[in-house]
Every structure is written in C-alpha cells, then in structure tokens.
Length: 350
Image 1 (cartoon, helix red, strand yellow):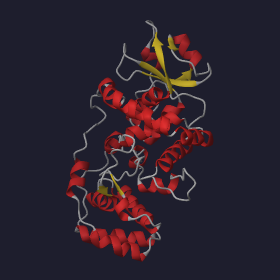
Image 2 (cartoon, rainbow, N blue to C red; image 1 turned 180 degrees about the vertical axis):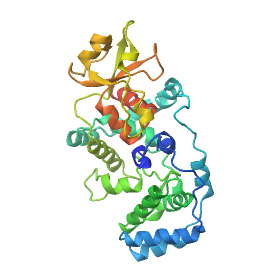
Image 3 (cartoon, rainbow, N blue to C red; image 1 turned 120 degrees about the vertical axis):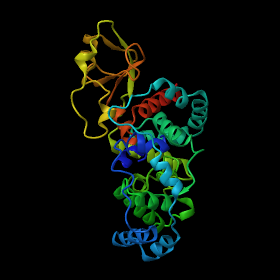
C-alpha cells in the first residue's frame, strides 16, 4: 500500500515499493544528497521538528538519543533496481507465477474462510470485496507471515539522513513519534526497511489517517489484530474511490483485425506515468466490441468505461481494466502488483 505514499504507502509487495511506485515510481534526486551534518546532529534536528509538530518532549528525549545510522537500510535503498523511461519492461507471466501461486492461493483460501464473518461485515460497511482485502494482505505480508523486523524509527531516520527522499522519510519519522505518543510501544513499531509496517504494510502516516478499528475494542492494532488490519485495508480502498459492484478487470478476447495503434493512450498521467502509459485510452465496453475486443466474463455494462491492457504484448492474455484497477494502483503503483492482486482475489473468491 505503500506505493502511493512512497511516491509522495504502502506499498511489494512491501520491499518493491520504492522501485515500483508509490507509494515510488520516481527515482528522485541522487542518493548522494546527504546532509553535511553528522547523523546525531541530524537526528537532533528531526527531534526539533517533531516537537514543532506536537510530539511530546518525553517521547523525543526517549527516542532521539537511541538512534544510530543503519547502513543496511541505506544499502537496501540504494540497491533498488533502476528503471528509467527507456528501460525494458519485464514479462508479467513469471511475476504472476511467483505471486499467484498455489501456496499463496491455498493459504489465502484458508484465512478467507476462517475470517468470513468479519470480512462479510467489513464489505457491507465499505463496499470493498472480501477477496480484495485478503489478496492485498496476501501480497503485502503473506497473510501476516512476513511483516519485517526493522525498527521503524531508526530505519526512517536513516533514510531521511541519506537524503534521496528526505522530506518523505523525515515526515514518516515524525509520524512514528506520534504513534509512540499515542501509546504504541516502540518495540511494536517494526516493519520493512522502507518504513512499511503491520499486516497491511502501511507507512506510519497512513496508519494515522486511515487505520480502522475492525473489532470494536476501541483500538487500532494493524500489527497483531487481523480484524483491524483488514478493516484498515478496506478503509484505504474505500477512501481511494473503490466502486461497489464492479470488477477490477475482466479478461478479453482480441479479434484478428484489432488495430492497437488506434487505441494508444496519448495522455500523460500526473502520477506514475510509466505505469499508466501501458494502458490504452478509455472507451465503453460497446466501443471495444466494435473494435474487436470482447469481454470473456460478465460484470461490465456496455456503457462502462474501461481500458485495454496486454501486459506481455499481442497474443498473450489481455484484460479490460476498470476504474477499480486504478484504485489498486493507489495502494502500489505497479501494473504487475495490481494485476496479481486482482488475479489472486479472483482465485480466492472461486
């Protein structure tokens, strides 16, 4: 879920966020943009900023002196793959095989059935499908098995010091201190090296904004409470504009006379342009039929606006994607991520 936030959430799954979105599509300035201050002095400045933003002095005094520069975190950030506008696009099929595999589907179905009463209630309240909640959970942390063990305060302070996305990570560091102010113990605030945390791999600011109490106990615990984690995922999607009763996409059959050049998208998206440029222009289902592209599944009206997407090119699986596909991209702005989440959700629901 990180993709959106790193661009400015979430969020491979979590470890792909910086590269794929956005929660991180943009590579930003040089990773050499370190401050001339030493790390302890920089950490002190972070503490002063936190105080200005309302964090208690007690919290600042408890955390700032303990921080050390984590070179492993910085190495992970600098080791992210490149991906300029001319870089070749890998094939989706191998990614799909790794992320929508039998093990992930089977474990997802097990957790899905175990949590049906909760999931059903959250879907009624938010309009976000049960299967989408579980698929996001499965992609982000393998249903809670891999949540990350980096100290968030140290990781985010280190990334802010490195400087490639200083403002983003400095802001997220302050958000961690705000969570501690709320009574969440620091030992619980663990996550990926990029600062994503809990079952849904939210960045700290996203927890503050969209974390949801899923079981009515008055707390929002996305680290150990599955109900809260899934309700928070649904709240994220509802906030991002998920439209009830519409699929994320349907598979499509392509006629032999279809002219792909005639449907190229000529517009540049304001966010993650390289991701969106791979989609066609948007037209109604009936317009696509007239061009030789037909949906192979039900669920779309003839007037629904959809875009055509062939991730691996002509002659390979194709989809007509809806506005809900773009909502998945809000969680992590990667076509491979969004496709895999949708396909895993479909497998879990069947």
